[in-house]
Amino acid sequence: MAKKQRRTQATSQDQMIVVVCRGGDCGSRRKHPGTDHAAQLREIRNAAGTEVAVTVSRCLDACEHSNVIVIIPDAGGRSAGASPVWAGEANDAEVTADILQAMAGPADLTGLPALVDIHTFHPTRQNRRELDEEVG
Image 1 (tube, rainbow, N blue to C red):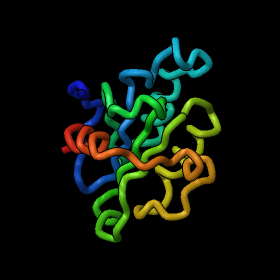
Image 2: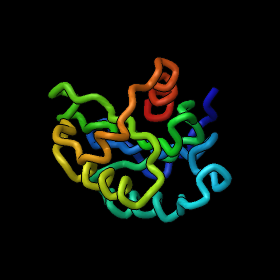
Image 3: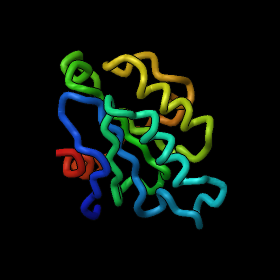
């Protein structure tokens, strides 16, 4: 079961939200020793500015896909039918760069950068429930 999350920035249902998992295997130096997890989070926060809310989750229960980053479209994107994008194995600079590009892209998250598209996975109902508790 996921633990309560730490909010790192106030969120609004009107803005895009990026949830960075840092529990379980996500953010683990033992599992991903070549990943600078703190630098990745800093880069995401810096790119977010005031337009995108960034939330750190202690666990989204998708450890088999670690590191997991979820991009939730803003209200306009959701009304256009967009769903959250769950990107797994976000463990290197190239994947992080494509995540930053997706954050800056269209509100409906169409035309995802190649590496985000490749690393996208379909979450389980439990994963989605954990995400709802994180940003709800």
